[in-house]
Amino acid sequence: MAPLVQLLSTVQGASALAAMAVLLAVEAAHPFFAFWTNRRDRAVHALRNLALGLFNAVVVALAFAALWLAAAEWASDRGVGLLNVARDRAGLPTWAHVALAVLLLDAWTYAWHRLNHRIPLLWRFHRVHHADAQMDVTTASRFHIGEIVLSSLLRLPLIVALGVYAWELVAYEALMFAVVQLQHANVALPPRLERLLRRVIVTPGLHKVHHSRFQPETDSNYASLLSVWDRMFGSFRVREDLENLRLGLDDFDAPDDATVRGMLAMPLRPSPPGALDRDDV
Image (tube, rainbow, N blue to C red; front, side, top):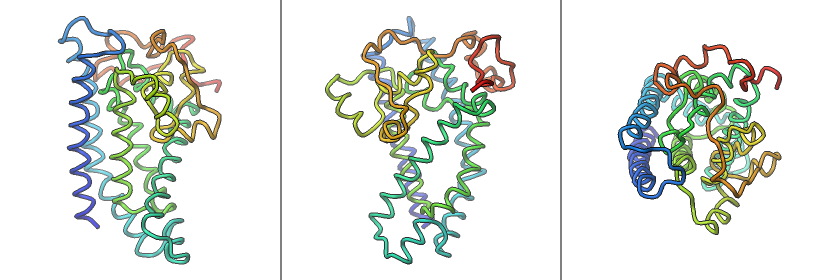
C-alpha cells in the first residue's frame, strides 16, 4: 500500500501546484474583488500565506504522514474500524469502501470545521485563516500550525475508528484541496454554473459568504467538499450580492496581523474588546 500512497501523494502535490498556478492567473486576469493596486502587494500577500502553508506541510509530512499510514494498515490488517468490519463481515466491495470513506471523511471535516467556530480555544487558531481580508487562492494554505497539529492528531483515532485505507485518505485530500483552492480563489463562476455546482460541492460563492465579517454568515457554510452537510445540518446560506461582502475579521486588520510572525502569534493575543472571541458561544 505504501507505494500507492506515495504515488497519490506525488500526484496530489503536483495537481495542487498546477491548480494554484491556473487560479492565480485567472485571479490576475479577472479578479472578483479589486484588492490590489500593484503586483508587489499581491505577491507579498501570496508569499506570506504560502510560507505558512509550506511550513504546515513539512510538519505534517515529518510528524504525521507515517503515523497515518501505520494506523490505516494496522486497522486494515486486524479488521478494525467501521468500513473494515463491513468489508470482512458483509463483503463490502472496494468501490463502496471508497465512496463511504469519502463521505465519512468529509462529514468529519464538516464537524471539525464547525467545532473550530464553536470552541473558543480552537477559534483562536482558526481565526488566522479568517483574518485574511484579501481572500484568494493562497488563503487555502493559510492555517495556523496549532490547528494543523490538532487536526492531524485527531485523524489517528479517526482513521482507526472508520477503517479507511491510507490511499483513500490521500485521494480524499487531493479531491478536497482542489475544491478548497477553487472556493477560496478571488473569482466568480457564471451564475448558472454556480447554482448548478453548489447543489453538490462547495463553490466560491458559498465560501465567500463563510468568510464574511458578519457573524451569522461567518458561522455558515462549514462544508469543505460536499455541500450536503450544510443543507443537512441547517448551516447552508446563500447570498446573491457577493460584491457587497466585507471579508476578514474586525480588529485583525493591522498590517502586522498579515505577516508570518503576526499570524503565528495571533492565537496568543488577547481578543480586542468587542472582537469575535467565541467566549459566549
